[in-house]
Length: 148
Image (tube, rainbow, N blue to C red; front, side, top):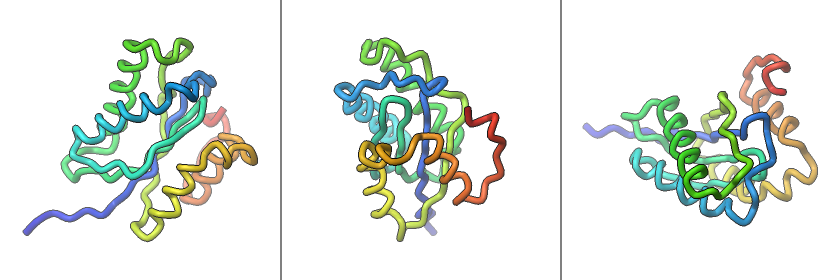
């Protein structure tokens, strides 16, 4: 019998101290690099986007890969690319933590649109407001001091 895992993850990572250092003109290059890392894990990228201080990824995860290893490899690999390319001179590194939320297949298209429209979305809502809402929607208890 084959293994089937229709689990999608909505992953949110922010820059260290949410420094606004990911300039718009080089973000597509960063996203291509991350897409390559995801492919190396035999996983499928459905959408990636972000702003100056954070990124959103919608991806499947191959059943042989642990989520924490997947995100660690994305962060380490993209940090290495950023520093090697000089694409974002003010980038120090990614924030230690991350958000990873499971998403049902039926929610995929709505989330793709949400991720695609990040710039428009953040005209009305800050990153912290968005992140709090994601945590609350997922039923995650959190301490405010770890969000700032």
